Image (cartoon, rainbow, N blue to C red; front, side):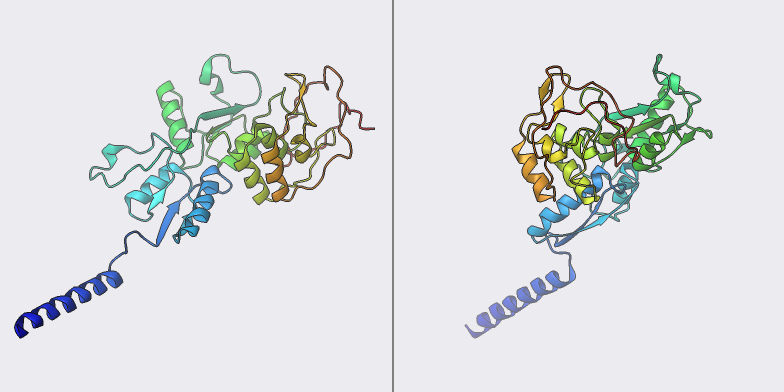
Length: 316
């Protein structure tokens, strides 16, 4: 009886010792700290990384973020085991390059179309019209560069030469606005701040800032990102309207000849982010609305040029 008791005691002590050694010498599961590869500064991947970092912190998980050039670099970091999780554009990962199948996809988060912005004469016969023009095909190591190179190769177009540059998204946007390049490729979400700044629809924009555009499109993530970049939350458009005014059915949509709807959620978010300014009285638009027009940029992400108002609504 005594020997049996001794054996049980030894077994229990050994079990406790093994558990103790395992806890302090092996990685715990689930982990208490992970690293995430994001992307370029001010890009959507970086914004997503910060949001995951914030949410997972509430769950007791510490997240270290690592800025990168984009999807291609992220896959390489995953292969080398230098990062735990990464945002990767669909189609970048090639199973043949991962024979041990160490990498796993977790989820599809959102769509990333290929955007092509260009200036000058219209493209009449496809991308071949861009031959000889100054083009940005994306930063080295980015998903944009990988997709653009594959597209050009398929069309028999060269990505070499002095006219082809490899700029980050923000650099490419600025270069387009400053007329230093003629075209730029972006693989990005519709909510990407650079895409928002370049998409300037002639029937939806009457000057103003990217903040005004984001409110019209109800891009809440973009509103948060713009606020984090220090945008003026009380900037006015050429009619004297702030983004907060837009949420109060004071803006105008020429293509429908209607005023903008009331956006309660966006109004609450803008106020939370620091917006305070509203026009004293609601403007009175004529039946056909103000003249339609298109500005060259969406300040302050574009040029800080002040455009003379074409028309002012009545406010008295």
